Length: 210
Image (cartoon, rainbow, N blue to C red; front, side, top):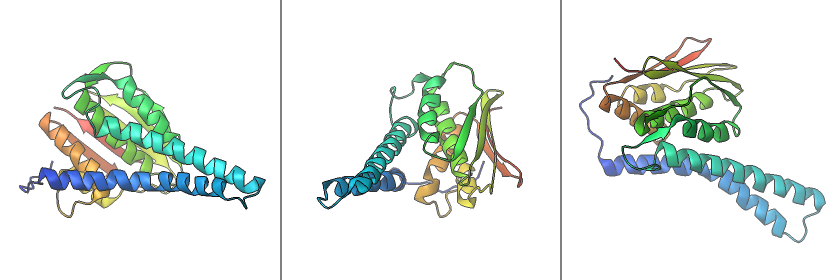
């Protein structure tokens, strides 16, 4: 974990996270808006209306997946400090991964887990999916009291800002890497740590508890 003594104002953290959520949602919501405009256009032919229908359907599917994810990963779903079923995290990720080019290989057994632990897993799994923009596989497995995510695929990419944020480094924190920073702080509160590595052939993300 980073020994960076800086503190991030809660209002600033909220603003960064809000920017991240808005960034995630702008494309699917924009697609829905474009589709509805095409449907309303009296000059639209049958082919254009079919394209519009696809835009609305795909945009709605992705927006709902992202909202379900954000509600559990960032919000207070289930109550503060509660335990939740790890299957709830799987269901959210299944919806999310259906909108990406990543395939989820879930190897966790049903269990009740601390909500913050599930939040960390959700954030890591989202970052893993984004690291294979050309398609790949994300395996989620248990590792001691924590988790291990292995990512394989074409043109693996793990943003340096994400790696820094996962270590708890606040230096030039951006909206995109804010969830990773939150995950680092949740892990730290439970005396855990997050490790991230990209060796060129696979990316490994680990949540480790002593």
